Image 1 (cartoon, rainbow, N blue to C red):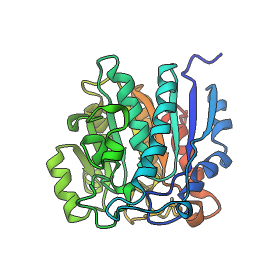
Image 2 (cartoon, rainbow, N blue to C red):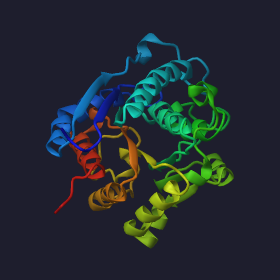
Image 3 (cartoon, rainbow, N blue to C red):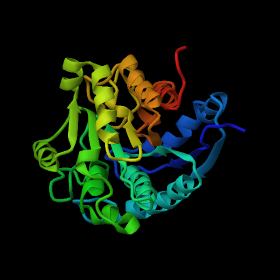
Length: 305
């Protein structure tokens, strides 16, 4: 029996929050890339909890154009919340496979609820090309995958922020954005108002990934019981991660992405991990899913030597 925590895998084939179809196939692509077997080879016991039931856009109305499909997304995230919370309560380490980034409203809420019961806070490291801190009032697209961090920090959109019955899920002083490089003007203002810690790609260029990774983990873990890492694969440059819904040039290169995850592993502070926004429709021979698997393995202890 492994001395490491059991990994609880949860797929969330959700693309209601995205502007392009395809990320609903992300969990399958990550599994096909060998995630479960390769975690087992690292010595982990792995429990694959299957996929959270998720509707597709063809069977639903988008509803409010400022927050499309938000009620359905909230229901999916609530189901995920319950499953992730049970895994944490059992002493496991949840690994959530997206799906679009709105799934983090469920997974991070579960981390927050679990540690809240123990009078402890949750540190959140949000690794993403985008801020995901828009609200229905500021979003120019109405796509909810641009809103989950706003919900975790505050009250909007209410269908996501209300999960678990308490607000907020995370405090700005315990929240760190890493790798952002594509923000609209209202989102820039929202990030400044939020007072979260931010390391843009400019800071990574200037300081180097080693300094940024160490500092991000230090900030998120200070005064908390560990960190939840929510990793959007679009933080990586499209040259290594073509299969994402919203690619933006100038992202993390292969070694920067791995170094970040290796630093997470070295910290011993990882309590839950999301790998989201893999879009097989736009991928090349499942290379982005393969990268997602490799990055998850780095975060969970796979080392060069």
